[in-house]
Amino acid sequence: MRLATDLPGALQAGELVLHYQPVHAIDGHDLVAVEALMRWEHPTLGLVSPGSFIPLAEKTGLIVPIGAWALDEACRQLREWRTLFGNERGLQMSVNVSARQLADEGFAALVGQTLSRHGIPAGSLVLEITESMLVEDQRSEVSRLAALKQIGVQLAVDDFGTGYSSLSYLPRFPVDQLKIDRSLVEQIDQPRGKAVAAGIIELARVLGLESVAEGIEDENQLTALAALGCALGQGFHLARPAAAADITERLAEAL
Ligand code: G
Ligand code: G
Ligand code: MN
Ligand code: NA
Image (tube, rainbow, N blue to C red; front, top):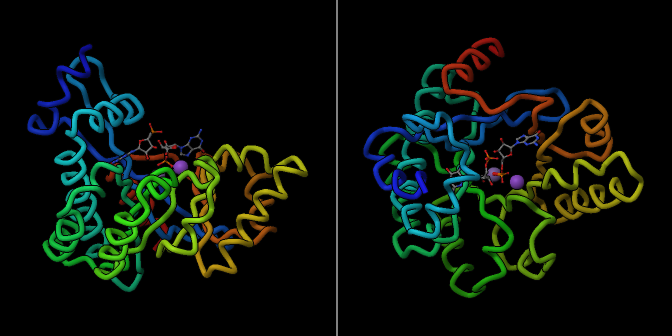
């Protein structure tokens, strides 16, 4: 188990990096946000995707320091882009958060400190949490999320539609975005798939939440989502995750 033995040293060794996937407005195509996605530049295995080491980091608890690093690095990078391209452009940064991080007593304080260290307005940070985190232990989760909302960050439900299909958390949790999972976007070319996507987008609308479609891989899916009134989109058809320098170029082109 190379990964398991090497992971504890990876953060210290500077082997973890963030790539960023653009999030575009579906009407107008503006680049409005990026999602930070971790990568491990392993000295011999090459670029390792988070799917293969995040679960390991969660199991061992390493996700707490690694996640704190990712939050800090994402905010540092957002500061750089906002300074280069103007705060008024309003670029937002999404960061994935694991259950283990949210369960940490000091998480909201950590988020607050990280934002002030980099001079980032709280509203431009989106924390992505998964549905399964919301159904686990509702009472303590509600108070943890409320503490984050008090700071002013936005909260997104990631992989929406793939969890325990319990919607009972939605009225109670102060979330701002629903990120429609790519397994649903994939089925949008079929009548029943389209109906489900339409229902979610309508649900987001009546709750006053932003809808974000993930995993858009072709023009037909984009057109269907636009027709349904989905606000934001992400996917290989729009832009792949890329290193910070590539995103800097894209932002410069969009000026
Ligand atoms: O890039 P890839 O498809 O391999 O991502 C797999 C999973 O890893 C995604 O579900 C994503 O949410 C998660 N992930 C990526 N970056 C981070 C991170 O910085 N922190 C946490 N907790 N999860 C991440
Ligand atoms: O769980 P989360 O939504 O955070 O996972 C994001 C992951 O989805 C990233 O690892 C990213 O590489 C991947 N991803 C982004 N866009 C697409 C896409 O259009 N198709 C597929 N198959 N994966 C995508
Ligand atoms: Mn995500
Ligand atoms: Na997702």
